[in-house]
Length: 57
Image 1 (cartoon, one colour):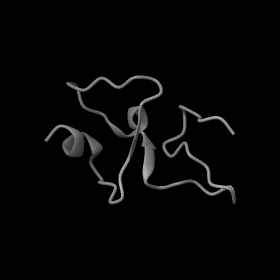
Image 2 (cartoon, helix red, strand yellow):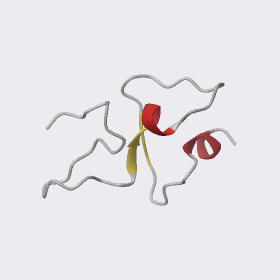
Image 3 (cartoon, one colour):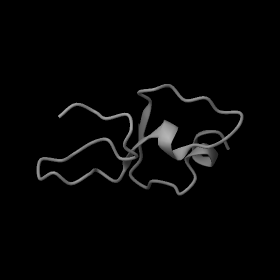
Image 4 (cartoon, helix red, strand yellow):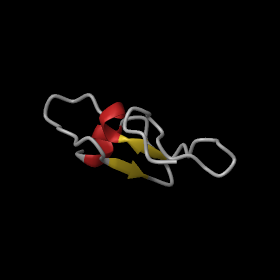
């Protein structure tokens, strides 16, 4: 299955569940000084509740 840029968690595992540690950044960052491209993803073993603060503290 191809990555879907409209989903917050775009990566699907073999059993059909989503991978919660991988996010489509355009869906989780709402900050006026950060621009995110269409297919920009991030993955973290300890995903933050605020991705903008994690990426640009």
